Amino acid sequence: MTTAQTQELDVQPTPLALLLLGREADPRSERGVECPGDLPSASDPDLVARARAAKEKLGDKVFVLGHHYQRDEVIQFADVTGDSFKLARDAAARPEAEYIVFCGVHFMAESADILTSDDQKVVLPDLAAGCSMADMATAEQVAECWDVLTEAGIAEQVVPVSYMNSSADIKAFTGKHGGTICTSSNAERALNWAFEQGEKVLFLPDQHLGRNTAVRDLGMSLEDCVVYNPHRPNGGLTAEELRAAKMILWRGHCSVHGRFSLDSVNDVRERIPGVNVLVHPECKHEVVAAADHVGSTEYIIKALEAAPAGSKWAIGTELNLVRRLANRFAAEDKEVVFLDKTVCFCSTMNRIDLPHLVWTLESLAEGTLVNRIEVDKETEAFAKLALERMLALP
Image (tube, rainbow, N blue to C red; front, side, top):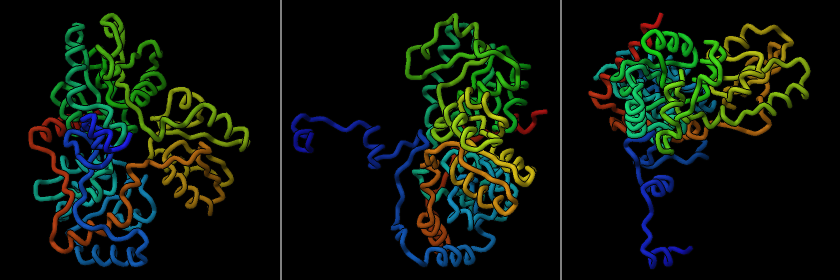
């Protein structure tokens, strides 16, 4: 249909359509599209020199955080690298840095803002660097879910546990309702704590991490888990199903880790005899069950560091990290390959590229604050409460 035909029919683009077209922003969502200022050309041969010069000019005023999934051209300028929570804590440990430039995605920058002082300013080089998983649970949807649990007569028995990969709004909901946050490293401890507080857990927003932890680590059965679909009436569940469940899993997933399949595992075992399959717990349950090792990003790195020379590894996580590990450990005679044949980058994480980083650093060096991520005080207070419960886990 042409634009003229659309106008004749008086069809108006929906807010979601405008958002996807890059013409609007949703302040309640991880997605954002505003990026004021002119970005340098991606082909500019002086980008590295410009980034280095701006960073040197800023000195101790800036602290650059680089998530493991970032591309190498960005990672080279990071003062520290790590997963989302480690980076947020690293930022909080650098109170002298006026600017925290988070080369990650939106929810990570929010966590950094929550944990840093009011004097520090957290900056995201591209506001469109969101997280599809975090987008799958909005504050309105989760509030509606709680109403469904209340109507089923079980809300008082339910303890929310939210994955770090969630928006500040969801973290605040969790804190307000007596729950805690977890990472992929401490999900088992978080669930054990939650079941000491109540009889059931509402796990947000990644169903796979919740299911894998409950079944693989806590010894539950798949029948103990139900999936709440926010796009269906009552989550697509009956009151009886909710009452019978121990784990109420939100229907969310990681767009990267969700791509790995059992066929991927079987195929790599045929291609590389003796290979060790190591996957992230955000992968589907059948993939995790078929793997030799399962663990967080930090676990994956440490496992390869400890691996013997001559060993072979197929890694089920984001491709930028796998490539970096493959290059790093090739010198130690360790073969590291990507689990799937299909190229699979985190598309939103990859929005943080060298032109955006250069524009950000040069703007800050000139005294112009850009793309600040700031969580409102009420949301921050409840989200911090949930994070503090996580930090206090035994």
